Structures are given as C-alpha cells and as structure tokens.
Image (cartoon, protein in one colour):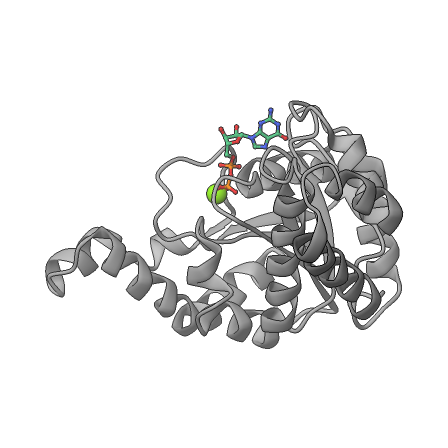
Amino acid sequence: MNVVFVTGTAGAGKSLLTASLISWYHEKSQNAITVNLDPGVLALPYEPDVDVRTMIDLQELMSKYSLGPNGALVFASDLIASKLPEIQDEIESSNPDFVVVDTPGQIELFAFRESGPFVAKSMRADSKAVLFLIDSLVASTPTSFLSLLLLSTSVQLRMGLPLLQVLSKTDIAQNAKEIVGWSREASKFERSLSETKSGDAYTFYSQIFRAIRKTTILTDVYPVSGYTRDGFIALVGELSRIAKGGEEFEEH
Ligand SMILES: Nc1nc2c(ncn2[C@@H]2O[C@H](COP(=O)(O)OP(=O)(O)O)[C@@H](O)[C@H]2O)c(=O)[nH]1
Ligand SMILES: [Mg+2]
C-alpha cells in the first residue's frame, strides 16, 4: 500500500488534484482510494472512500465547547490524530494499492500542529510521500515563488517524509513554464529577480534560493493541471516508480 498526502496552501488545488488522481488511477484499473482528512470541508469534487467528517462533527464541537468556527477547526484538526486507528482500519478494509490523502484546507492546521506529522509518521504503509502544491497563480513572481518554496521546505521538515513539489493550475497560469525554469536553473531565477530587486534585497533573495536548492529536495517541480491533467504522466510515473522502489518513497 502506497500513501500520498496532498498538501498545500488553502485553495492551491489539493482537492481537485485528489479527484483527478483517483479517476486517473481508476481508469488504469488500479485499486486506489481517497481519504478526506479535512473535517471542515463542505463540498468535495470526489466521493471520499474514507472521510474524517464521519468521525468528527464540527457543528457538535462548536456547540459542545462553545467554540466559533475557527476554534472548532483547530480543535477538529487536532482530533484527527486520535482517529487514526479508525481511519487506518477503514483504509485497510479496501486493501488498496494507492491511497490519496486530501489534507485540511489550511496547511497550518495540519502540518504545523501535531496531527499532520503524527498521521504521516504513524500510518502503516509500504511507502509514503507528500505532494506540496505550489499554486502557479500565487507563485507568479520570483519572490512569491521563493516564499512558497520556503513553506514547502518547512512542511517537509514537519512531515518527515520525502516530498515532491507540484506546480498546480498550469492551465490558467500565465507563466508556468517560466516558474519551472526558475526551479531548474538558479540563473533564470536570478535574471527574473533582478527585474524587481537590486542591492541587498536581491542578494537576500538569491542567497536564500541557492541555499534551498543546495540543501533540500528541490530538484524537479512537477507542473500539473488538476483540471486538464497536463503533467499527470510525469507525476504519476514518479509516484509509481517510487512506490515500486519499495520501503519508502526515495529521497531525492
Ligand atoms: N483551472 C484550474 N482550476 C483549479 C485547478 N486546481 C484547482 N482549481 C480550482 O481552484 C479552486 C480551489 O481548488 P481546491 O481543489 O478546492 O483547493 P484546496 O483548498 O487546495 O483543496 C477551485 O475552484 C478549483 O476548481 C487547476 O488545475 N486548474
Ligand atoms: Mg480542499
């Protein structure tokens, strides 16, 4: 059983990518299931096989503990960890090859509290990996791209699993190819950076960028569209290659 956690900032396209990945797997006759770990989501573009909303009731938390919607969401996200045995049982009852896990809308509720790292560490699987979605509409400038790379690095440290960076929404982005170019060649990033930054600010950003490239997994960014499925062959190929690799998804 190979598990992939789909993470990213709110609105980056996690749920749509989960929906598209699962229908891709099903069309290829793979035994694949989805898990929704977002206790607060109202509508999903897929029918989750395992759904944390059947285990955690946001409305009940609000009335029982006199919480507002934000407080209840924080509480609910923390409760995910305690539901792991139940989640695991439900997953294993389908005996799947691939499990696509959609994570809470707000990354900080998952990756930067205890539940995300706990679930990532404790879930039983042959291989586990994380996708971090970088919204190409948000990452359209070198500095905003860099800030999302920093967030991705931070999520990787929290989750303690190999992580693939996915550039999402390439079908509607103006400059998806340019962003991929930045990720592959520091000189391209710096050329674009120099259009808006100079002096100390330029040095600051370019040094952080080079440090991330040197010390972390940033080798490839996978450009995809959850909408048109552009880029799926490369992404799914990498996921299966890693899954076949055995124990853990390989570190870059
Ligand atoms: N055009 C386009 N829209 C997308 C894509 N991925 C997500 N969206 C839209 O962006 C919005 C947020 O997507 P969603 O999957 O709910 O994001 P999440 O909060 O990360 O789960 C929705 O309106 C989606 O339809 C994509 O690849 N292409
Ligand atoms: Mg979502």
